[in-house]
Image 1 (cartoon, rainbow, N blue to C red):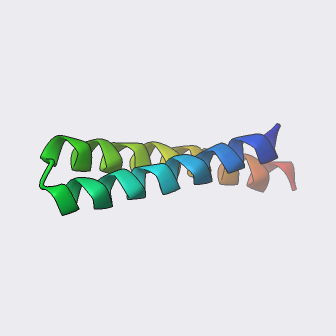
Image 2 (tube, rainbow, N blue to C red; image 1 turned 90 degrees about the vertical axis):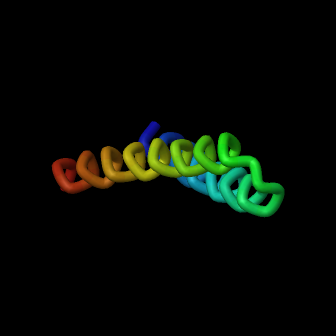
Length: 57
């Protein structure tokens, strides 16, 4: 389960970065903001999983 969540976090971060870059390239501020938000969501998920790992060991 934890590995699945970590993979999901990485996926969200990558997808968000792609959206941000595309949004910036085409001048779409909404898409760029969505990308940053998705990256932040992935960062938060990753931090949560790292915290859980600390308490498991």
